Structure formats: C-alpha cells, structure tokens
Image 1 (cartoon, rainbow, N blue to C red):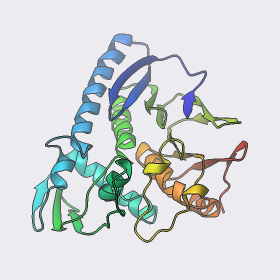
Image 2 (image 1 turned 30 degrees about the vertical axis):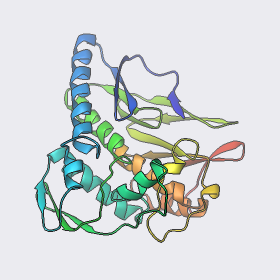
Image 3 (image 1 turned 90 degrees about the horizontal axis):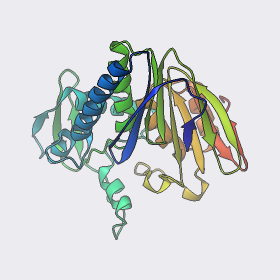
Image 4 (image 1 turned 30 degrees about the horizontal axis):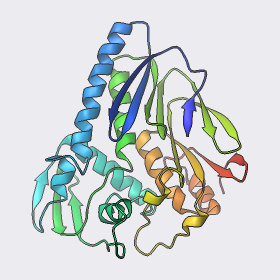
Length: 285
C-alpha cells in the first residue's frame, strides 16, 4: 500500500521473516560496514520472531499461552519490552488494540465454525522484572499487531548506535520507519488517488479491509459495522510500535472518533483516510 519513491542513495538489504519481507535501506559511505550491520539486523529479526511469535515452538509467547493458573514465567527482555509496549497501546487506544485476543483472532483467521470464543482469564505482567504470571487461565497473547513495528524500532536503535546516518526500515508494504538525517518521500496509494508525504524520524503504518480487515478483532462488547470500515488508512507515529497499534485500533472507529484521537496527540502524529476517490488527512477534532 505504501512504497518509497525518489529515495536517497542507499544500500538495500532484504530478509523474509514474520510472514513478510523486511527491507532495510541504509545510508552511509562504507558499504562493507553497512552489509555487516545488515547481517546483524537479520539475526535480530530472526531472534525476535522466535521470542514474539505465538507459533514459535518454545518461544516466550507460546510458553506464556500455556501457563496454568498460579504459574509464573521469566521471559526475555525483548518479549517483556514488547508486552509493555502492547499494554501501553491497549490503554491509549481504549482497548481497541488488545494483545490478548489471540483466541478470537485464530477463530477468525482459520474460519472456524461456531461463535467467536469469549475472552476470559487474567495475566499479570510484572512491573519491575521480566516475568508474567497467570492469575486465571483463558487469555491468549498475540503480538502480531505490534511485533513488526516493535522489531523496526529495535533495528533503528541498533543501527543508530552504530553510527548509521539514516535509513528506512520496512516490514512488507504495511509499516515503515525512517530514522536519522534523511527524509524519505512516500506514496500513499488508493484506488483513484496517490498522496505524497515525507517521512523523517517517524513511522508510517497502513491498514485496510482489502489487506487485513477480516483479521481485525474488536474487544468484547464493541459493536463494529465491518462494511463501514475504512477501505484504507495510514497512520504516522513517532515509532513503529505505536504506528502498528494505532493502524489496527483506528480501523474500528468512525471518522470523528479518529479525529478526536488525533487531537489527543498520544503517540499519533497524522491520520490519512481514503474517502471516495480521494485520500485526505484528518484534521484534529
């Protein structure tokens, strides 16, 4: 849905993981050094996939989802940080982004028969150490709605610390993160319109019913008219984690609700929506 155009001179490194293709466009004069850092980034992506995916055998999230009532589990720093990010975005979005809806997400994705599973149970993420406790069983963690953006954030931090002057990191065509001193022109492409924006030290995430609308699950008790969902929307946020979470949550809102969220400024910099034949930027309400 979004691709960079007229981008700065860079080295492109790609890697398939998390059911998508990561693209790292890295700026700098030493190509050999950039390739070496790209190799390190690929290893980071694979390690994060193992720790964050609910399907990774023996991974942190899979082990969390198998906890019994009264059990606790020490987890990796990376999974702990991603869970804390997901919890914050759950609060900011009024639970429209919820990382504990793994059961109904799986029910929808697999086209399982019967009614959507009810969400119950309680998990506790400890505030002072990388540990999760199961209070009562029933919650299923799924970090698919934030894990790719979180991964881009981690990569950008690593590359910045190693002196990469600028770059554009992408997880497929849905989420991009620009860092450093380069500006990246981006195209927001709809059916009949293309809107050009510049991305600099910010993240852009896209969502839409044609791509993943069927996989966006509202919390229990939230009534959603799926036919009224935006066909496409794009979110600009300070970081990849927030951009990913907001692009999911905003799909469940009416335009006036989106505009009120934009006014709040809570890790949300801009919202673009395809309306009819145009792509418009929603003004804060």
